[in-house]
Amino acid sequence: MPRPFIRVAIVAAALAIIAAGAALWTFFNVPTPQVTSSGTASVGGPFTLVDQKGRTVTDEAFRGRWMLVFFGFTHCPDVCPTALNDMSAVLTELGASADKIQPIFITVDPERDTVEAMSQYVANFDPRIVALTGTPEQVAQAAKAYRVYYKKVPQGDDYTMDHTGILYLMDPQGRFMTHFTPNTPPADMAARIRKLLG
Ligand code: NI
Image (cartoon, rainbow, N blue to C red):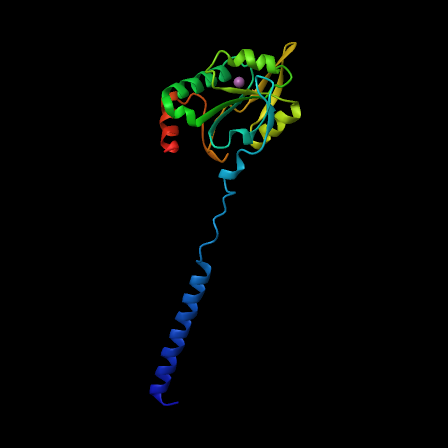
């Protein structure tokens, strides 16, 4: 081949390689569909429980409102009463915006936390808090949905419960939005919630 043709051939080959590279780059950089199962979808889900008035309640009853959910038990010496006090303080702090939120307390100790026990216990806190109990299976299902750990621990002739002490904020569609660790100051929680409520 005469020299000019070789040069043209080399340039053509180079362009072909660049084009192929660009095609490959484009192919591998096509945005993949957003998978929502990473993190956010893993907390929350369906539950069927009984409220402090003895009515059967499912998670769907709360669609359209944000849910502030806490799992605990009425015999808890400190973490639970503190969390429920904080929950009450958050509602007060939020003022009228609190109407958008359904605060929910779910027991992890259905054996002792009957409807009556739950009713008496939550009377110590904000009256807007719904207190839910159920059969051990119903409670286990709810705890599993929220990835809540709980375990009976013998204590003398009695027992106590080990349990996750986190507050969960779910959006009006029941999707996990954020969580609060125990002892987060209520004012901080209220500020974060207010931002999310928009
Ligand atoms: Ni507790």
